[in-house]
Amino acid sequence: MGFSEKLQEYARLVARQGVNVTAGKYVLLFCSIEAAEFGRMVEEECYRLGACDVIMIYKDQKASRIRLDYAPLDEYKTLPEWQAEQRNYYAREGCVTINILAEDPEAYAGASSEKLQAGALAAHKAYKEFYDIMDKGGIRWTIAAVPCVEWARKVFPGNTDAKAVSKLWESIFKTVRIGRGDTVAKWQRHDRVLKRRAKILNTANFSALRYKNSLGTNFTVGLADSHIWKGGSEKCAEGVDYFPNLPTEELFTMPDCRRADGSVYSSMPLSYQGELIENFRLDFKDGEVVSYSAEKGHGALERLLSTDDGSRRLGEVALIPCDSPIAQSGILYYNTLFDENASCHLALGECYPDTMRGGELLSEEELLARGGNRSANHVDFMIGTDDMEIVGIKKDGSEMKIFENGRFII
Ligand code: ZN
Ligand code: ZN
Image (cartoon, rainbow, N blue to C red; front, side):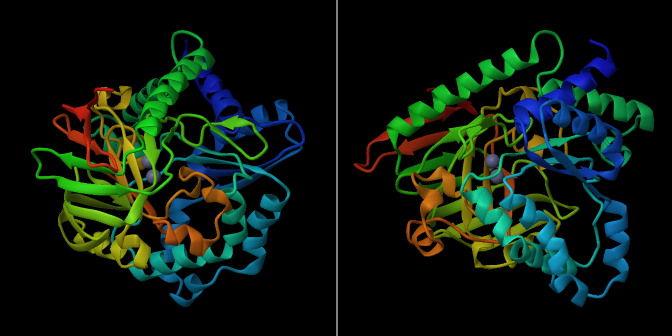
């Protein structure tokens, strides 16, 4: 398959497997300005599948950086109603959303943390209607990424820009299973493997997981009562399948945000709001981060943890074997969409209500009462290593080893 064929296949994958555009749907297409050409290809695929309208919303990271340097903090504290209404309106109309990212991992390094934080909080509040509809399964959504020069340079240093970009394209194609053979069939097979393992974990119904590795991680996290392990494709409220992330390798569920104890060491750098946090440790007590350290990006970690109360607690537990295609490639992408699929991870902040049986139907208070977590953040960080051992602990105290040497043994 030549480059242009792969590109076309990728655009199709996003519109079909990704959000599964059906006749008469509105598509909100958020697209990095650097990815405009690919964005238009996706737009056309959406119309071919019967979309009634595709609303293209370009994101310009470099312009956002200039705004961060010049606009006063007050401008970040609220989001104008007209801007919120764009997203909330289409959510009410039953849209699907596509995010095409081409991001520089260090675009916001050194920018005002106060503005970034205020902006994130204001957006979360203004788009509440959109997120509520999404949480109840009312919106199919997907995220995919394409290279930009700054990102490619970071992933493949020491190459010409053109070479780095082409290397990044090829590695992205590999992670999303585009190449020799039928892409759709490969995604269906992959989905079946994920679903089978999820079923085993759901049947075991563990009350907690205990992690250990040679980095120093020694940590137990409680799983919420009636948690559900999910992975691969999801079903929206209308009963249509979609893949929220391209690529995706993870099985994930809801922790009880009141039960986490011990220390966790990061195994990969975390890019948070355009800044890298490296070699960090979080110490948990009764579900909350009580102390922490970082060799690099201490300020960004502090900002993340102090966003709100929920940012110091966990909202997601995810398992990925170290022999997944992304892990095997050995490439560090400096982008969570890829790196989270290379390694077991946890997320600080907001939980996914649909990782608890009936969770979408619970009120905020009910969800909190069952150990769900609420926050303006949901930030994945990687903890998996090739010597990770994970033991599942059942309610009766009996134990079952599920991970050895970084791989599933179930
Ligand atoms: Zn995850
Ligand atoms: Zn996550």
